[in-house]
Length: 601
Image (cartoon, rainbow, N blue to C red; front, side, top):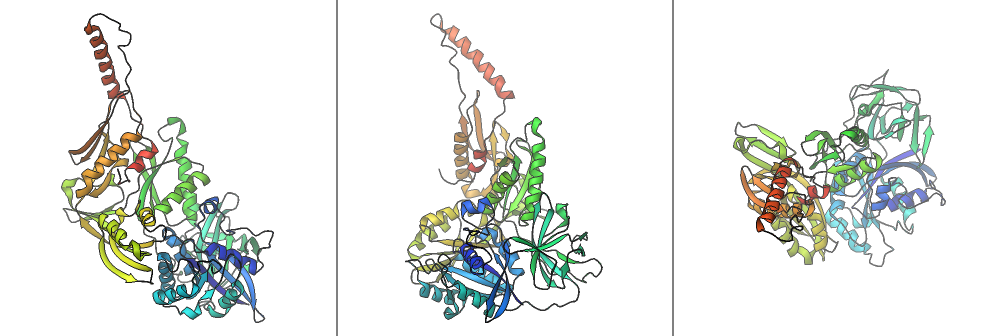
């Protein structure tokens, strides 16, 4: 039996998951009764948002010209924040289906994913989806694919994942056009771990693709990265339901259960080999992802001495999620205002949002999240360069020679009538124009260089708003560049709150400081005493707001007599408020931490 390993890649919402559903039905892996939309999206979060978050590997069978083929395919996410999931999936394959929406054409992530596949030396089959829609323009999209990606227009396969049109032709093309897996290069067993998750009853479930040799139930295996050894208790494959098998051979994909209880013993990208006949060198594995956005997670009751175990619950939830999602990092952190928590790194804002929701749902913990920041390189007067992920870690200004911020190359694909507004948006975010390219009669590509800090919050929303949903973007970090950057510290009631501090350009620091204080004024509740809010750079206060005290009318009971009676009561109240202010603490709500991101009045 011949084997074909491939991934399904596309821009977000171009129909990958629906196409995967049709492939399952066309190969009779799923019956009509079992079929449902987004079959491979197993998380509630994926179904609610209509996006794929985790790559899913499935094995099906298809017969062409009387010969049976085993097809192992991986449905991957489409959003730029989950590009690491896509790169891991592509490493385990020899080919890829590049799906393009016939009503929207080539978009930013289409181009990025196509380049990713080419880097991995994969054979690409362009698939034009949604041809059943009235607005479909398959011929125009085929020419776009040829112009932008260099794939011949006549090789595009037209199909509709919704109606099933063209699906059988696509399956035939997969079997005929995609290359067979490479032959084993060594007689020693080597399997690449491309995913894993934690099961409360069976321990760590490991997903792998065998490149050399074979594995069978009862084999004693060794993880080459960690050096730990285990005995295989169960082997299986998703068809798409978990199905046990006695053994798996070269080029096959499956899962393994080996009573692995310690979460740290499995690393995505590690190589599995046999204990008694180990391989001489491991498989290449994966390039470590570069985290772009950082923020702190604290348990919401960390300040309550009666609920100290909330921190442990958060630690356990993060450890389990890290096993399932290797693209985020974490380290322990302590804040005066919020107690013990974790400093986490993410690939983007959506990735951060998804991780927070998964921690709250799957881990059952309530989280206080600080405003996201990016990493900076700081060159000290001594010549030493340090990388910081948190404004609170910035050294004393007197010791700093320069601060460098991450710069991204931004590629925007948009309708030509929105070019002017998008250029204005990029210029307002300190963007440097590079090139403007022609894509089709109605769409163009803009290339800009922008600081990452300027696009992580609301840039994508503004892009979608300006282009009425038709604009898309993709970005990658190209360098760190020095600029006039300063740390703006926020003081609440005279005390600095490090979780609210930020690093921004000196020219906009005063403006940003005033906006943050106005936002905080609306977010923090009034207390029995007046609360001063201040923004400072170094020892200089650059902005101030005050939250007025809640006052009781103590003179209401005075109906007459001398004015000194009223004055005496007011002075007594004033003394009491002054004493209260010295011991009073201000509680800061979750919304206040996100207020520092907004750049609008």
